[in-house]
Length: 367
Image (cartoon, rainbow, N blue to C red; front, top):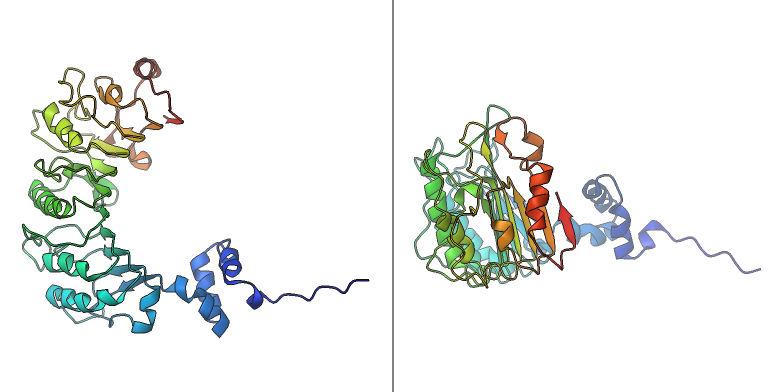
């Protein structure tokens, strides 16, 4: 009779097995924190996970200790907490980051956290170039004025950022009084568009992925630049605003897309307010001129998502035959009945539009 195998203790399992098991917990992060405190063995296993993403409040805490530097892949800077008496000193914070970032060998993502007064500033953008492997940048504090600043920070015309591949500028809709949705003030939009245009332009040779507000769609891309590196574009929120009596010229919307010849993914999740006139959700009207370079227009596109499609929009007819994924949806679905108008195509009109199309490589159709 063969001897019974000796039982294996939980701590004796391989590192990857231990991590895999905790991923099945209801709250994996909390379980990993509990295990981290049990023993030296557990600390060694879960330390790289626990300190992979660091949140730093410069006015409340010192920069993370040097022994954690090898584990940090993502860093988020957040404002001081309510208990802090220190003022958020933008220049000093950028200077400290300039010293510490070269020591973070695995840092690939930096986030500007929420509620930082004035939004992104020039010195912070340029100090990020000190990080040896930074590729992604998320901006979660919008350029806006507040009690302590009369106007947001204005980025320098000539920026020297790191070679970023991804830039995110989310917060697609602004809320007031609970769930009420509203557009941003035009002056703040102009300010944000100018800043975002400077940042995107400074990274255009390496930029691969961009997410931005729908209201900034027309103002964020410098038309004098060839955006040949960009592969993915996500535009979310309100459709660009224009004069109340007019929608933008078809050439405005078309000209932005013509700047992006190598896009693989284009996601346009935009809607308008219930109090706005009809006909504002048209990307390229059927009576609009064809693209100047029709044969190369979005020629490499694999995925196209769009909300608020109407029968008078010809964008589907201009998509390449190699399209693999097509999604026609609503945005935002959970708030559809409150403040946003979302046109819904009748089935017969949708079928008539789809019957005009030919995508032999299409793998996914989601309506």
